[in-house]
Length: 341
Image (cartoon, rainbow, N blue to C red; front, side, top):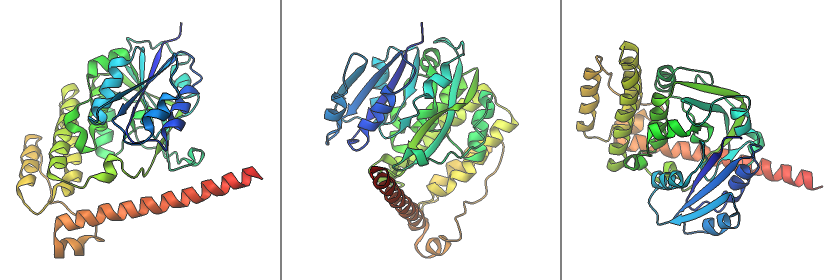
């Protein structure tokens, strides 16, 4: 009998995308699956759209708004699967994603092998998603995976992971304290990787990450004091996960590298927040250089300070994302008109 795969979809105000996301889960060629959608108190039509898909293997529940981590934990509490497939409400799975990851493999619910895959970014037409390989696109030991994540500043979105029941239980729940950080998934996957025997990259499997969703966590928040505290906690926990499996010169060096590249985000005029950076660097056996900012924003920093320079950087990134999104919308509409003739 095939392993049961639970596809878990947390959703909040996702009426524009949720139908397409659920269909990508239903269209999986892996036949033994269940889909659990948790609406986290949406104020739009997300719940009604999701509810229209409800059936024997699709469960849709509503909860008062409690954040993405709590919505994921609620979905996990309802899951019966031997494997867990995380799927954000605006992302998509290729129809053969799960089949490629599980077919021909004797993994099973007790496996400690963490499965990942190819993924690409898109705005509207996932067929134009850009698949850009990085240093995580290969089989790796747990320590090497996290080291590369820190050293190369690369990541994998949650949709790539296919997680055995055993690994899911070893990792534990999503940490709601990290919701504001925007790196709750980064900390969680470090926990998964640290609990794994090895990370297996499946080249043939694919999924798609939707860029530039206005209203998402990363779009709504600036570098508030609460967010920075949450981000600091996420970084420290991630460092601990790596050092729990290997505490060596190379793992401490990777933590130092990540710490150095993250400093600029914490520059908000007051020097106090950076003292803990220097203290942690000393504990790791190294030192840090004062944070630097791109030459493009240096004049703003000199005249108005770090906070204004950081805000300018975020705004410019948002503007670029909006421009790319609108170009993709135009190309998607143009392609649709062409095929309708």
